[in-house]
Length: 216
Image (tube, rainbow, N blue to C red; front, side):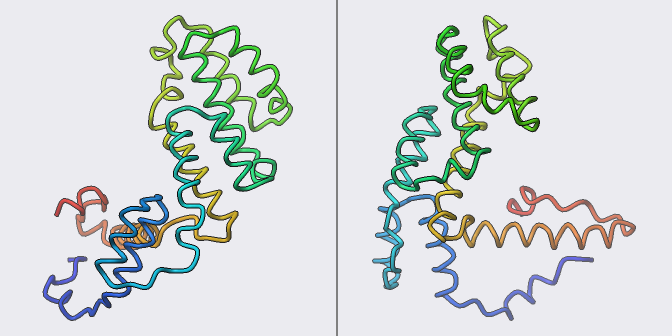
């Protein structure tokens, strides 16, 4: 069996401060300012330097992007992290594409086309953006774009993906971790367990699935 005896877990000493720092990292990363303040107060932790700096601004930017108000997210990002979007063209393209999608969803097709010609067209000079641009422009051909083959571009999941990328980029720009400690631990644990599974595949061990593990 590849799983350790649960009784062995009791011999692994976990430092409360380490656990608190992991939780705090997650809360700060996701801009839960009020929860951060309550957590620090209840645990007696010292308030880390700069943890609250720009958190409220990041939160606003994240929610504007998540809600599809990409132009406002871009405006606030340029105030908080000047030149970030100039350096990160992929992220800039994704944000502009969110605005294009919102125009399409609002049935403002003429405005969407004009926006694409002025803001998205320059990206067409770079090969890696061509296929993406074609997918976005194809939305204009459908009376109900949400029923098109590119419907995923209109989804909350897509906006979440762009908003998360923006949040990570802003954190990295401020020389802060772009992923929380909790995310890193989960990523590392998943990789290790998947690797162990591959070593035991001949023993009939089922593939490791994080979702199933969390339910166990």
